[in-house]
Image 1 (cartoon, rainbow, N blue to C red):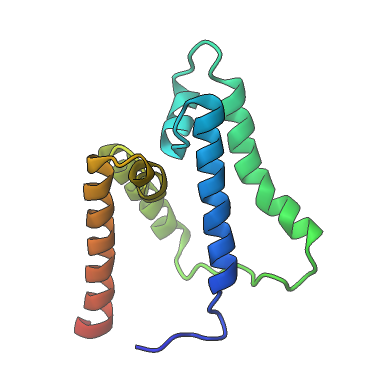
Image 2: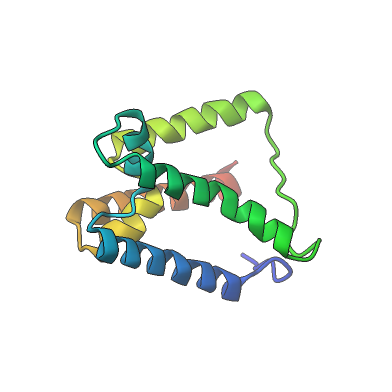
Length: 145
């Protein structure tokens, strides 16, 4: 195994992880709610009294932040995203991720960041399953196919 040193970004990855952890910690401290994006988005489709405004604001911030970042940074700072799949495959993959997220009671980052920090046994099992499936997939693709 080799490391792609040109695209290896440990410091920006660490900074992103720290910001995500800080945001999750502040959200739970200030609002008393877990920053689980799956639950927040699901709440948009079954609105409750006083729960719609902050959900829309949070989702809008998640969608607008990369655009603002791209506008404020010099061109070429980040490589353009490249998706090597057709639109049909992307749609099927998105539906499978959505189904798995609902079936698993949360997404990988929700369980890994928010669940593990709350010492949730369910999140520990889910995160071990996610990671194990990822390891197995990489092994099969790189060594067996």
